[in-house]
Length: 367
Image 1 (spheres, rainbow, N blue to C red):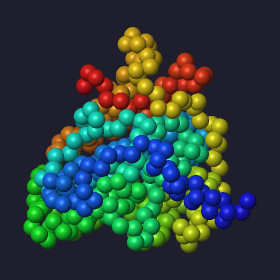
Image 2: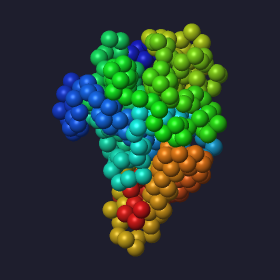
Image 3: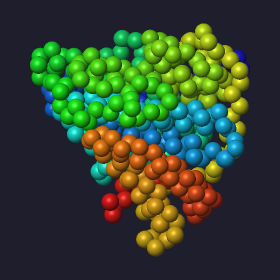
């Protein structure tokens, strides 16, 4: 099969099929299609935080499931996306703080339980916590899918993340012109470049409508590309793939081929092969649950420890977004610990169909 035909099949595979919304639970609409006022805008920016947060567990789990010493390029690509999702949380928090919001992460129900639809989306697909696989990568592409031209902005029940952020940006411009929002709230909470560094992307302090729009554009350009290209805004391929938009990094893994300079969304990748060993992955059961085990079961206790690290990670990030800038730095060791605990769980038999356990990312009862 030619690469062109394979690329066409891939596009068809990740597009919503007729009736897909009928076979998966829809998320109830919580707001009107257009964001009407400042309170609703703050609500939607909180949803943006939850949206970016919801991608971390699936990406981290897929990366952690790779057998040590194998699939190094694949692991690097997934890790790069995961770290940029952290940047997206920073940017969404900066916008939310600037207009008088209060970022919330460390609370039961904020982080989703898996499998889940993306927060406030149309529910047309579900995201799982599962090991690396072709299906998992295609789900990641569906998360990051570019928004077709002329697609209307949609605050609720969106099909693509780009639609959702377009609705937020439209509201920022409209409400700012009407004088219904200001950007001078909580200036001490603004995360600066000196407070956070992840290797790619720009940390933007928000102080007016222009900087708010720039921060949100940074999010969408990193995810789906910029101006119908495969790149993040203002970047070219760096030889590793980290300057590609997230969608196209995952496409490289899915097709097992790198993008070349000059490639386009229509051409797909035409560069060197990207070997992917799908067998060098831990045999983890998808979407494990702490409730499968009794309180004193050692397997459950290991899951408790992992969930505690998840909660502490969210607590530190929340502190960082509420003015304690060191919280962001304190969150990094918790993320590393979480990865190691997830890997350790993948060596523990689940007792189900010969599969191993893994992280569940559930909010612990004791926190």
